[in-house]
Length: 257
Image 1 (cartoon, rainbow, N blue to C red):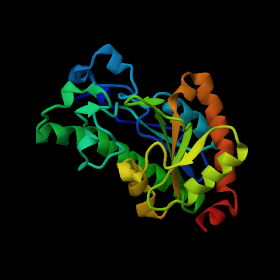
Image 2 (image 1 turned 120 degrees about the vertical axis):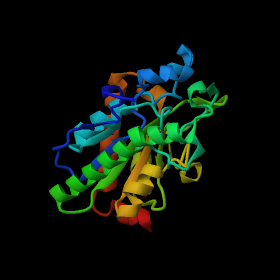
Image 3 (image 1 turned 180 degrees about the vertical axis):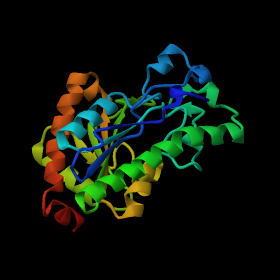
Image 4 (image 1 turned 60 degrees about the vertical axis):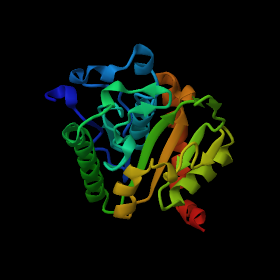
């Protein structure tokens, strides 16, 4: 494991002034060469199992629109899932939906620890430092927004929801965003769908928002809505308006009641 092939994190717009940070843990499909594509065939390598399709483009466009830095993962979640705690079995999954991951089977403790050190630790160190820098710049707590995408069909089941707003222990911003989204009446939106904290998907929120007293929301977008860059840019512009409404004075107070 060596060289730039293992770059775990990219920071875009580090000098932007907004009291917000956008994170995209699953934005990359990159698998370092020395892992041999984890033994995956071309169909698996092109699938949502490897990355959150379209999420990085949405995150980058959202950060630019809202003038917030973006902390983007640089390595596929199949190598190490930065949105899982080290104790989670699916931090290095041996199977993802219908796809077996041969290169993740029967890993020894040393190999798992090495991936943790090369992927998880630098990503979260960069995210923590970016949040601290934004707070120093703005003089108060930042808001953490994480961007993900999900497949329209999972294990043979069609998913009707188009945008989900998820939360960890504190639901305030997710509820405010859902209210703002539903008021616009454009996409089918839901709270804690297609996943929730009970599924173990809020590690980043728990670590960088809940533990630090910051508001946060995890946004899940159905990936057929952001299948190309143009669609991703439109979605980012749409979400920026929804988030501005949710972050407006009084919006979160009402959502907390």
